[in-house]
Image: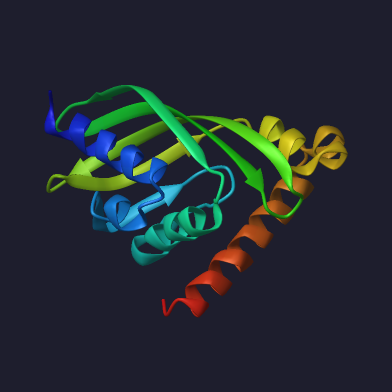
Length: 157
């Protein structure tokens, strides 16, 4: 098995255990992360986002599969089940992850999922009606970044 397949497996196994430190050990110090909600996070902010999700995701369940990797790039498919704290609604998110590697660690991580599908679950009727709109997406992103800034401020980052 390729070492980068093992690295991705370790990352998601740690996430499933809500072990942010184990996840951080998989990331290069100069890592960049982006998804449909958290965009362009670098280094400590990317690690901090996972730490926040691990600490706050009390009912989080993660499954992963279809891991492929070579020396420079990799991919995986993963799913998460959790309660969205802002609304108390249940979410099942399906995500395609893409990775780039440097020095045996993840240097770039990009997750892709349907924002509209996520919004319908997390936001209820508002997400169903307006989850496709840039307005709702930008509001969710802004709130997520405020939550991350608050979390990092409380935890000394």
